[in-house]
Amino acid sequence: MILIGTPAALMGLLVFLVVFSFGGSAAAACNTMTGGSVDVDAAAQHSPIDGFSGDQLKNAAYIMNAAESLGLTQQAQVIGIMTAIGESTLQVLDRGDAVGPDSRGLFQQRGNGAWGSYEDRMDPTISATNFFKALQAVEGWETLEPTIAIHRVQINQDPFHYRQYQPAAQNIVTQLSGGTGGSTTSPASSTATPTPSATPGTAAPTNGCSAGGTVLPLTAPFDQTSDYGPRESPTAGASSWHPAYDYQTRVSGASAGRSGYSCGSPIYASQAGTVTVAADYTLSIKSAEGYTISYLHMYPFDMTVGVGDAVSSGQKIGKIGSNGPSTGCHLDLRVNTDGSTNDSVSALPQSQTIGGPQGYVDPEEFYSLFGVTLCGEDCERKSF
Image 1 (cartoon, rainbow, N blue to C red):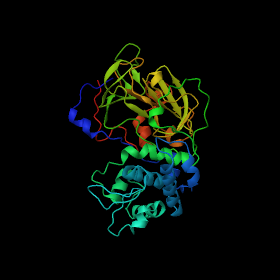
Image 2: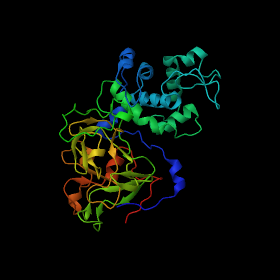
Image 3: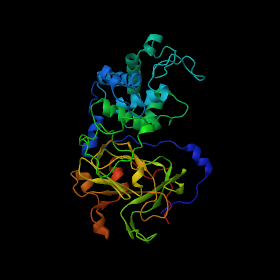
Image 4: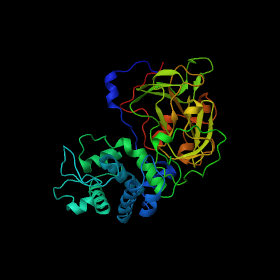
């Protein structure tokens, strides 16, 4: 189902809400896996990643190596790169801004003595090392949402400023570490329409870390517009037992001639995996642990991945549409646990035990296992 109407003032609040979290048997390793070192010269020659290239990727490699030299995790590497994207777009800037005219370098560190000399702030390795040392002094930084942990170091005016840069940072860490998934082209060239018969890609990461954990599938804020479980069928062809939650963003747009809230809004892979279905109105991604997350009602030409592709968490996989049995643009999000090797996931109550189809679980309970709240404080529950 869809949500009709939302206050226009909320449009200005749009940020990409991504919760960097870890749970379950595979993903729990991310907080303990030390980030690896990267060849900085090879990074500079790497093909573009989410629009970043050349010296920008070389600087990302310096940041990753600084974290590795301190024995920090891949999570820290992502946080460091998120920060530098938000402060300098991964450039060593020899200038500040109106708020901090004495700010310099990748992290825009101030000239107050706390960050070392001018030369230290302009040196990618030293400035990154000083950032990570300050991050380590933040109590509980590993369990905080990354943007909040960063804010406590950087003291940015907007504590949520860095959220929007997490998918790109995760993708950079994945690819520079030798992982797969994520587009290696600039955003402008990443809209090619894949086909369901695309050549199979490499297997998805199996350690749950290189892809960066579990993230929300939509740009926040968004609202829940249909529940999991029995319901009255809203339109011809739609199920009366809904093994999913429906979500709608608060952005007006258009897709395939349909216009309104949510139409054309980006959809992101919540976890790493391999695409098993990309046809009609369904895109399914199978985890390395056997369960499958499906994203419904996209139009095939809006899907940006194809069958066999390995994807990383936070990677854009398509746009919200109103394809198939649907009353308007929205995302139907469902999780099937058939084949799961994750004991915690397999233990969730199955839909068939309460009158539903085989193998599905409540998506909110599933995401909760990984520390992610699907419909949080900013999310309104408006089922019809």
